[in-house]
Length: 294
Image 1 (cartoon, rainbow, N blue to C red):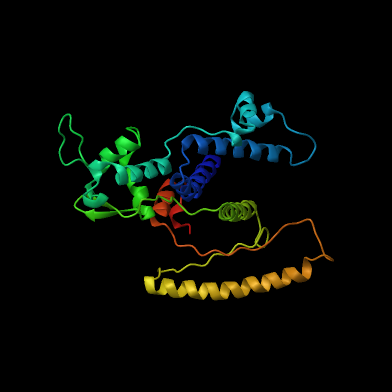
Image 2: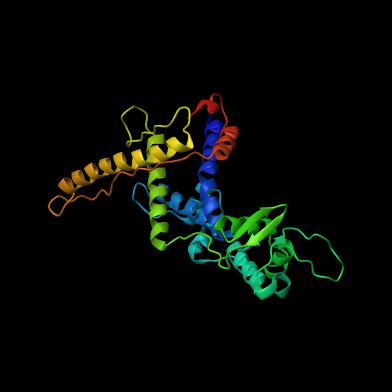
């Protein structure tokens, strides 16, 4: 039973990490940096668990025993947030490819207009450089960079279009991975952290009514594109009304005259399920009845 719980929890963690990893990849964060962040979070989580009683600071050996690391490894994790690691930076690669496309005479037509090019070389002639997207990536981003990943990134950003028959067109000379401001990143981090924190509390509850409020409703038979737009308008209107009511309640109970040490609040989010992620998660679940969970 214990192994089943551990296996299911690991499957759940992988499921949670999938959208986070997609955001990381789109912004040039690779394995080494993610691994360092995970190690730091793991050590911090162990220290928090070991200091729950507030008696003393745990040793590196104690943290190592809880996390499966050596004491030396735990010690090395301190300050790891400040480190950077060499990894394929596809944001940089995408920018370099666009710059080459707009400046290399092989890829320019009359009046300096960029040419539509095939994704793969149409023919390979020894000693002659062939015009293709793969050749462009190899020349300006390096042989170790995946042309497929760079192309996907450029298409998602809107800088490149696929015309069909294996031909691509450049429509913008600037690559912007995602328009992420520090403020948006902070809002994202706090929202995800708070949602997972609520779930962590509720995983341990033993009786109905314990824990924190957690309610989910969903369309049993899905929605059409038209009704999704209608639902989006409906939930924005009714959600704003509810949030205003909560804000009014807080204004009466959390002010200069009535202060408290507990930081709390309510968040609302509208989700659209990723079918492939969910299917992969359900396949990885262990134990009977996991496919019926919703």
